[in-house]
Image 1 (cartoon, rainbow, N blue to C red):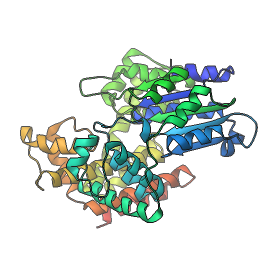
Image 2 (cartoon, one colour; image 1 turned 120 degrees about the vertical axis):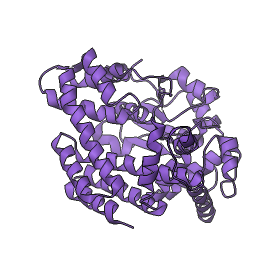
Image 3 (cartoon, helix red, strand yellow; image 1 turned 90 degrees about the vertical axis):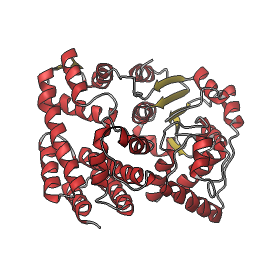
Image 4 (cartoon, one colour; image 1 turned 180 degrees about the horizontal axis):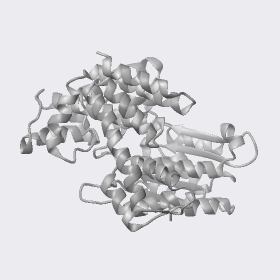
Length: 423
């Protein structure tokens, strides 16, 4: 079952009661968003769509049973529910994700999620050590993560927020009896525990698509990903063009792959097929200028960063893409700072000697395809303090919101100035 097939069902008037998307975070959320957009009339979205982020199973059940304000479809979109996640979360950077929510001012949501995560692992977030998180939840917790846990747990106590329990019986009972007519549950999650009865029930009565993240020894089918993205745009990609796209972007950067495909679709205009020479003209240049932008940020070279921004925009990239590249660069630098701290504060060398640093870096959920690049990433990160990088990431989130709500290029230029000059 593909996302497009599910959308076709909805448009024919045969929607499913439940939709479950999990795996690659970007793809799962994108699929959920498309289904939600197809289910709910845009004019009624403010009142007939409920986005539950951090809610427990009982709250979700109550929400599903509540009649919509207007007649028509009622949708509850459940995002990253902790009560469906495996006890051990592999390398998912869950605490880092919660810290980002906390830093963005979403304290209640972050605290509730933290308490639910800790409860599932049988931990007290106020006192759990890095070893506790590793052993009980499979999560690498750095010093910043532990400070966040202590602060968020103390704040939750002051606000009277407590873990709501992992009892999924109310939601399971509702699913067994059937959702009210016109109500739909859409779930998007990084990972789900297939052994849970609730997950089995969701699969039985609904549609499930797993976007399994690519592992080190597993290659994504870039042509299939491209075909799925391009089909609604009336475009297709030939085998040589797909091979060129894979060589330039790869299959593990799904968000960037979609951004490049969007540019290619605009570049070819009315032509239906995307060819290899189109890819080389659009994507290869984009890759070069994006490198100029991020490399200049690493050197704190404002003039170079401004030139990189100019070239990226002139090559067809947009302001959101530029901000996304900046955010990725800053996250990599922050992970590099933590990796250096975790390995004794020394810049790694080349070859096998860099392996402990690379492992510490990849514990943040990022990849270092070439270990020999570790030395240069660590040297770039040493130009920033951890506190500065955290502040800059918050400012990047504000800039992202600004450019997506009508803000212009000046917002991005101001952000680059702060990155290159802030101490």
